[in-house]
Image (cartoon, rainbow, N blue to C red; front, side):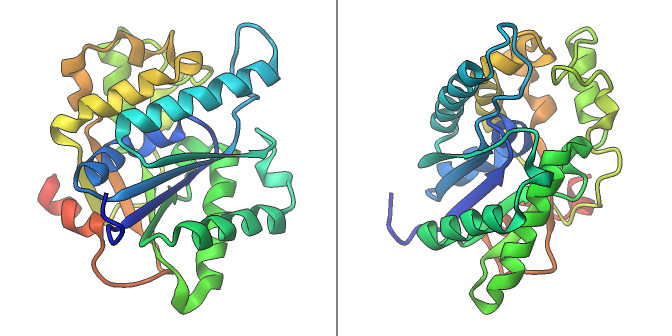
Length: 254
């Protein structure tokens, strides 16, 4: 991979967020030669599990995160050790320091994180949105471009319906929570044939999705999750980015 290739840094809360939210973008960017670094601020140790051992679950989810990153073509999968389920209440300065360190280390052209709705109003996701935005804002002229990702309304209902009504995320029974109040996107990215890779990456997160709607989908059903919504932040670098080159305005893609 060329050293001067564009760098995409994705910052999320838990292992599996990266695949579910922007697996199509990651797969397309990597296929075009971009260097993609995926970050999870937690190990996901508080997620649903059938054995009740959070430490064991955290280790398992780290392994699943690495496997999903490989499927998507990412260069690296970085896991930090902030407490799962506690991000809104942890020291904001510490989290922002860690995010600044990641930006300094990888020098991304573009950072992607959750939009203000946190995909489905997940408190950890919303906190990551706020912390990443604060870091990019503070960087001023040295900041990378910043994009927020959200779910297209109705997409997860279509997934659930295809799977006979199974939950798309354990413990979240309403698929319409995804994207229901997301800010309007400024860019739509379609994974196209790489949507199958996105589905495969989601399935790498076996501890979370083995009994979900995603486990019941056929490979051909990956088209249901091909479309992703992005919104350019009003902070960060201006100018064309890799996302602008592979995405289209919403009106064009409707």
